[in-house]
Image 1 (tube, one colour):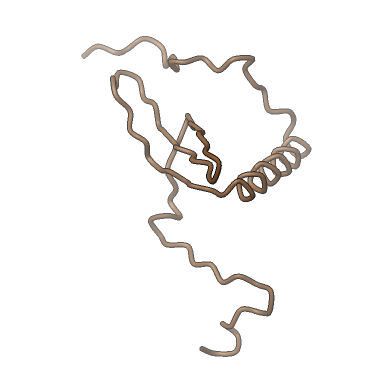
Image 2 (image 1 turned 180 degrees about the vertical axis):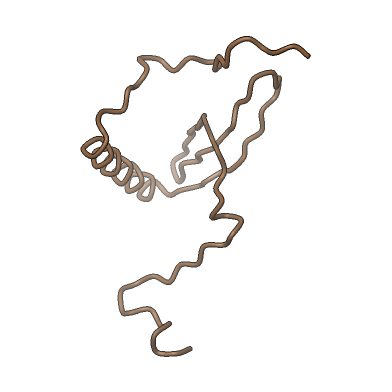
Length: 104
């Protein structure tokens, strides 16, 4: 490994695969926990589909879940400072209403 590719002390070397870099769209997160872990399932709910599949599942330790919470809060705060307040629903509308279905 060449000198310039070696991570510096205290740095983490992370590789982002092309397929992972494309991301997966999610408009619903379902969060469950046990004594030892938090499980976050990301779902993409689409109109007209009676059954929707979990697209991605992330399993975290309680400590990492708390770090994620803090990191998300920090990023939302910085986003709102730059772009204005993110509007939120009092209660998320479920099922999501995408309007009337089209006819062919």
